[in-house]
Image (cartoon, rainbow, N blue to C red; front, side, top):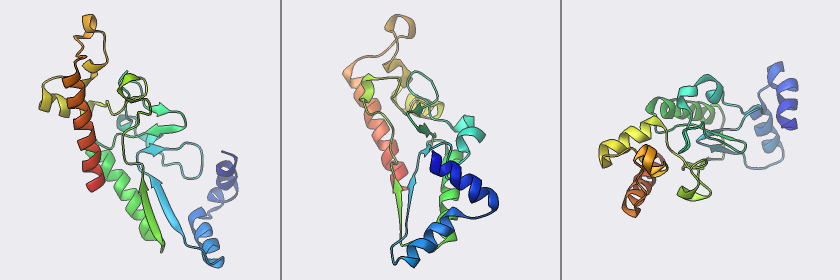
Length: 178
């Protein structure tokens, strides 16, 4: 956080492009310059901040409990939403094209859930786009996998869980291929 604040105050706000400085320094030292993106999250208050989280609340990923997916330091974005996916892609292409990088890593294009389906407060994706797509395919809203059966008509059967997990894996594969 300190480094990001320092860069913003002493570089970005002064019109200095940190990427240009880092690339020039890497070249001066005879090092490769690799650009790495974490594709589905906004890291917050450093000079790399994308502004997507603040500017596009409609593009925020949701957890299974329907909260914004701000998991630890990561603020996840809904790349299933085609507008969000295009905007992220446009930004990535723009930054890649600005400099002569030695390599580019499009990292972590997957769905967050370190503890798996058993922890709904951290399980993604459960945004409205995913819910609609899955319901059209499977006939039920995947949020039912997490609710109280008496209140939500929850589906706790293994076949329903497997169907959603397979669907979810297919979404991630599709984004990676695209």
